[in-house]
Length: 543
Ligand code: NA7
Image (cartoon, rainbow, N blue to C red; front, side, top):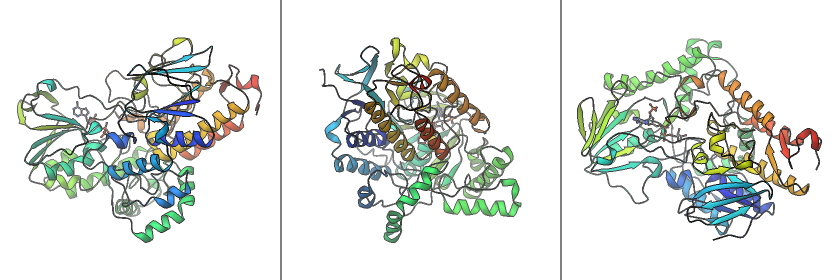
């Protein structure tokens, strides 16, 4: 079926896609959102595993585009659980009547640009065809779950599940022997819940991770009122901050203070809880090995004090630089290993040999299980984009042009792909920030850009190759000045075999990034090519 042309096709109806269609409507652009899921919500639609929860405070992990919405929606907990976040996004879809522009159960398989017509043709799995001058990929950074690549999985006679594709119907674990593979954020959130439900839980851990206590709690009415009243101010702090959260930045280095003061700061952070429990204490945890080591030692001491069996505690102690693999946030994670029905299997020296019909074989031992839960992560940041056959000018594919690692200008556009926009694409703060703050910034930037093109009677915009090269070099230089590239992490793509090892997140923070995006606009879309003409050719600003 050939659909009527709209101004903008948006792929994905998660936090990005919903904000996008709302803002486009406000600016009087017609839009159609194509969403693979049978409901809206993106990440929060798919990740329904027990214990799934935000790791940014609810008061900040929400839209700011409507004051009414801020006042109407009452978050129940400091860190909202997945069902509540999903209910919020469903409410947004209804409240702003967004569903009439959303096609569910619609998977985009290809998107091809016609240079002569300056149009994108988007094809779905049903063979339906959608056309629009502009295409926005609101596909998310963690939306393509990694298929477990463990030999013998096909032969397993029990049930296996992926945290990122959790069934909608409740999974009954009572009386069942369950194994979990993976101890990233998903595993660490799920394990305490699985341990409570299952008869026996075996955790297969390849790399231990640092996890900060969430210190989650119900939000009181007084706290709620204060948070609504102070929302604008708090949001402004988030937007100008590094991580998209309102926490005041630390002003000194870990070595500037005495050992007692250092310990005291970490303890205070730990009691406050949350992802920045330790990183918020000093300004150099990501850049100084020494500072990082102090924080690591503190975190390891906490694990040793919480886990009763010293052998298990040691196996749970990570050794990488803290924060260089995504820091997890948990409730009762380490304490779970004190339960009699929980066993930790350390894969560090002996990886899983294979999966058998009745369980998992490790080091010659067969672990009999009824259910395997894979919390093995995602093909992050680029996975969902590379999966679609995206072809820009001259039929060049995005996957091919990113074969050595993704390249963008500001994470917003890629050279050779006119009128294609990425929301929180590689080269932007994305996963190192509060995603909702970064998403709203990109959505607003893109809509303003489209309005600018319309006002000037233009028909195309794309990143110039030169500006893109400079931006990616800048992104790399910033990352290289930190400890991030030293770890094997999904930030670098090192969790996916064959993926180029490139650190593609902008590390200098939301505030500086936003300033740069605004500056590019006030310089007349510096670095972008409008109607095939570079910035110098169209003048500083042709509004
Ligand atoms: P992550 O953070 O990528 O974690 C995946 C975990 O699975 C991690 O511990 C991996 O160990 C482990 N893993 C992956 N493959 C295997 C195999 N084959 N055998 C054993 N262990 C394996 O994904 P999450 O879903 O937890 O979190 C993703 C993000 O979503 C999270 O950071 C939040 O931002 C939301 P490894 O470290 O590779 O040794």
